[in-house]
Length: 242
Image (cartoon, rainbow, N blue to C red; front, side, top):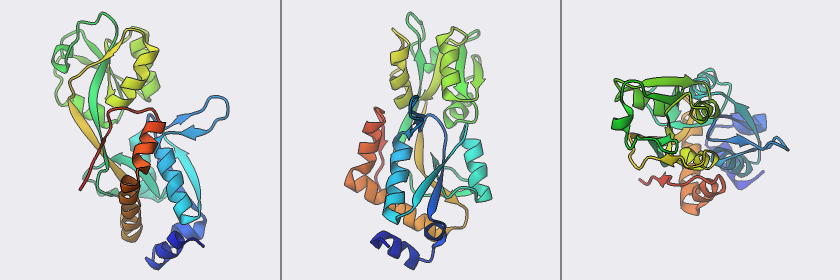
């Protein structure tokens, strides 16, 4: 048994160690699946695997289409961990936020849209992802543009790529990555909000939350969080301190 496992057991939160696995809920774009091998990868995958290694247990990933299902799994105790924007809810408990991702828009070549304000115009269609924090934030500030909802980020990107939307709203790191697949497209410099992301655990598991919180702080100080972000090819992610 590893030192981390002993320390975890001594904290009184033995359920994960006894089960031999930590169940982690993921949703895109915080992870991707390698086309040939089927292997999952992304910053959330790397952090989860490091946590499992510290505990000496396996990691079981539960793939979800979006954050609503992730929260459902947490509330029902079907998963032990997830990475979500920190929020006030009685359905899960959160660590302090450790990274921040800006919300902005991607527009195609020759688009006249230069800001969120110029996107908020009658007849403009903005592709968004259902239940994502970026969509909720955008809905609060847009009054004239039409928000076109997709179930997953890739489907929202297809709306823009096929000309069925005039802009795509999401987190900046992902938009900077996918813009390479739409020649001439550009990510707006302006942001319209941000997602402060932390780790989430089932409600009431205070000692498990304390352990995950300690792991996140150590992952920041050791450089693990930065390495996971770079390996995922995400740019302009801010590490949060304090």
